[in-house]
Image 1 (spheres, one colour):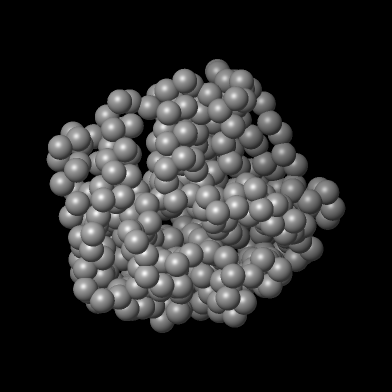
Image 2: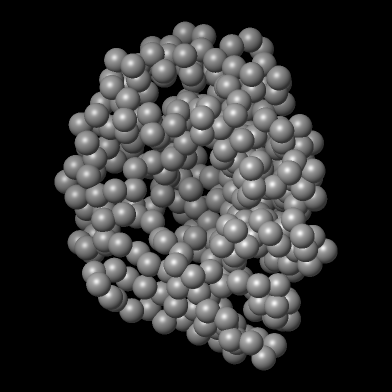
Length: 377
C-alpha cells in the first residue's frame, strides 16, 4: 500500500501474481486440480510466507468475464450442459434469442489450469445482432462485498486484496474468436459500440457498488490488450478502452481505490491513452519480443504517472538458467526503480498452469525474493 500511495519503502515489493493471488486449494483431490501435485507445495508455501501477497478476487464470481449464472431471466435464454469425454471436461452453452440458436463449447484438461474455447458463442454479425436483443436483466449480478471484506480480514498484514474485473472490451471480445473479433471491431464499429454499451451497464453498476463499499483497495482491470497492435490500430484503443474503461477508473479512484490497467503485449503506441484515463498503475509491461517497449523507457517516460508492475516474463522463469535469470532480475529492479517517479513492484507476467513445478522454476522464484530483499535503489 505504501508503494501504491507513493510513500517511501525499505525495498521494492515483490509479488508472484497468480501464485498467492488465485484461490487455490492444494488439498483438493480433484483430478483436474493441478495444484494438488506435491511439486506445487514448496512454491505455494514460498509465496505465502515470503512474497508480498495480492489476493485476486471478484465480487461476483471467480471468472468475471463469463456470463452471469442468474436463475431468471437468464434461464429463459441460456442452457448450460457439462459433460466428460476423452478424459476432459466440456461445457456447452446454448443461447436461443431472436429466432436464432447459438452455441459455444469449452474444454478443460486435467493437467493444465486453463480452459480452451473450441467454439465461441458469436460467429457472425447476425449472431451479434441477435445477442443485442437480450434484455438487460439477463446480465444482472449479485454482488458479494462481504466476501471481499472477509478475505481482507483473514489476510491481515500479510498482503492486500485486489478486486479483479474485466472491462467492457474484454466482455465483448470474449464472445468471439480472435479472428472474428478483429474483423467486427474494425469493420462494424457502430455495431460493436452497441455491444460495448450494452455490456458496460452491469460492469459499471458492479464497479460503482464495489468501489464504494470496498473503498481504498487495489483493482486490476483486464481487457485493454484486445485493442493493442497488432489486433487493432491505436486510435481504436481510445474508442474502445478510454471511452469505456475510463469511467471504471474514475469510479474506483473516486472512493480512494487504485486502478491497475492490465495490458499484455505491444503497449508503446497506447501508453499515452492509458495515462489519459488516469489509472494508478499498469502491468505487466512485457519486454521485447513479447512486448515492444523496455521497462527503463516506461519508467523514464511514465514513471511519474504510474506505479509499474512487472516486467519478468514467465517464459524466462521457466526456461532461463539461474545465473542468467539472476542478471535479468537485477536489471529489472534497477530499471524499475531508476530516477524519480512512483513505485515499482517486481512481478512476473503470468504463472505456471501445468501440474509439475520444476527445480529451475522454483530456484528462479527464490531468486526474485532474494534479490529484492537485498536491493538498494
